[in-house]
Amino acid sequence: KSEFDSASELFDGDDERLEELWNKEYSLTAFTDPSNFKSYDELKAKFNQVVGADIRSTETVTETVESEPAVREDSTGEETDALDYFERLAKE
Image (cartoon, rainbow, N blue to C red; front, side, top):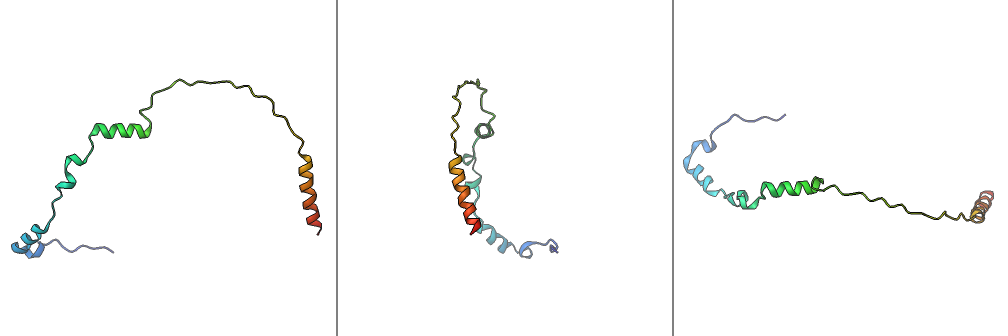
């Protein structure tokens, strides 16, 4: 079970210790500087590119290709050789 202690002042309100702690803090302005972030338009363009909303409709070209009928080769000789081989193995 998780519990929290009742709220109280940090360092029991000792101003010297609070100021000492406050002076040890680092500035976060380097992280929150607006130059580190892209504009809304840049982000929207990237989003549309990723989700495909930026793709323009294109004309579909269908091409009919005539194919020659495939010549069926008789491969029963090879299959029967393999079948005979396995039958001989089964008999052993």
